[in-house]
Length: 356
Ligand SMILES: Cc1ncc(COP(=O)(O)O)c(C=O)c1O
Image 1: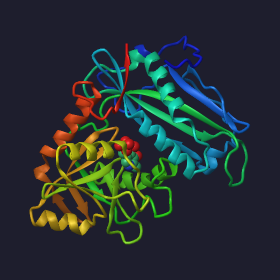
Image 2: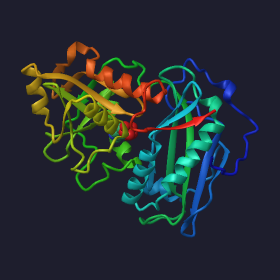
Image 3: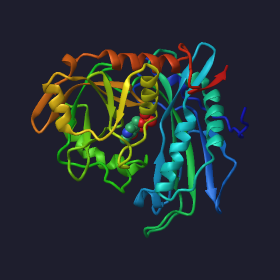
Image 4: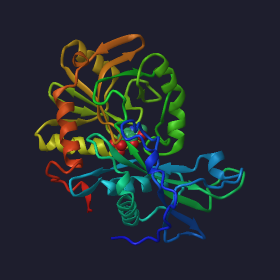
């Protein structure tokens, strides 16, 4: 087991948690992992109490957004903890780092840090099915200057947050608005990186969609506005004629989801036909008309699987699978969550398990 130095929090806040109303990203556990990059190297790293940090007004990240993050979950099992696919998140953090000139962080060291932190915060891992301890690694520039250039110093932090499922509706189908006005990512841009700017770009569109009664925005490519990229904080999948279809990653505008990869891997295990290729809005509306569109669902760490019940584009609306959860969405959800909670065989060694 890893052995980062620990400064214990003398003022635990765990008694203030309402475990029946966790929400998402509302409560934060007592400790964080921190590592600083100065003089061209990351320090050893340590676990310290969660608390405020001092920043100067010229902190470069506040101005130029040189920051990346990750999101993954740890689950309470009958005899310990499962962290779901942390190496994938550690590798993706480094891909994001490369895109915005942040120095990489050793992926094995990050996973060791996650393991020690979740073991320390065991009491913060919620006990109910559907709940988990969400882990948020974050890296940002810590140098103080004005002028657009990369920071010299950086800080990596891992925050833990006990969460219910992302959507208040649970696995019930959501309504999605296809944005024909705003763009999230462009070819050659930041779309494949998990960096703050992508989320800033999405805020106004998501706010307007919410005002109209939709849960999320589905993004199209920024040039032709025909090709489907992804949804809010999820990748998107279609079941057409029993084939699982999802936009390919090759344009560099979509985040390479860990859940997306899990679903594609399971679909292969189930013997499903899979297509990773460009998908247009016309194709989805046409296959809906011809009765071949069976299901649409989003995939992501927060919700795992989120069935799409209604899709709206330029005032045209289609209802998918009668606003019901489809059998494919249900099967992927049951299988992934079964593996996460240690109830189903973990054939692909996705979990990093800790015995408690
Ligand atoms: C923009 C975006 N796309 C897709 C995803 C899904 O990725 P993952 O399955 O790794 O959570 C996320 C969530 O992290 C996201 O923020």
